[in-house]
Image (tube, rainbow, N blue to C red; front, side, top):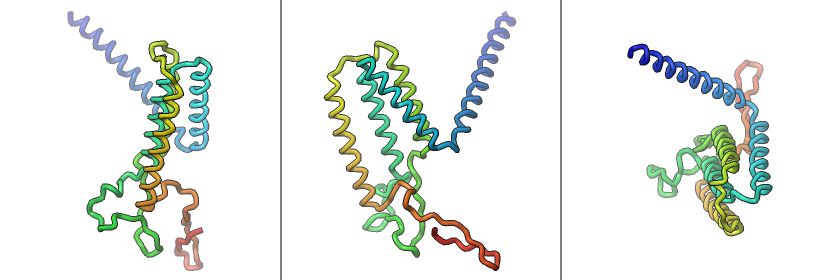
Length: 197
């Protein structure tokens, strides 16, 4: 009796160790991709194109495609939204919180609700899951796909219009392209002076 318990415990322990090793290896692979932002996004776009080619070739799985599109739209909105939503900041003045518009105002960097790496990781993972779902006939629910396309386009336009209005109202820009970058310059005294490029 004790031997059976020990052998079943060792099997569970071996499985647990194998699972831990696999998860550590997987996390190591994912962590090594962090510096290669352009390559990661290129591969994610390629994966989405493979998914779309599979759906177009198979002429089905439109519900999976629609759900994946809605999920990607939700991720994109979270990527564009600040971590601390200025609309929910009730401690601000009557006009609401604003980002600095002059050099003498306090600088507050834009912090995303969904960081770029997690955005990429979620897009990639959900696309792989969607691609796997296209190999199972039980997910191929017959629908009239043009209605789904029109509904997705309508939802995308309404959501982006609301997000752009939010960005204009609270004066934030979620992208770093075109913003001044600061770098240090050394004078003869050896002090570092920070000035915009």
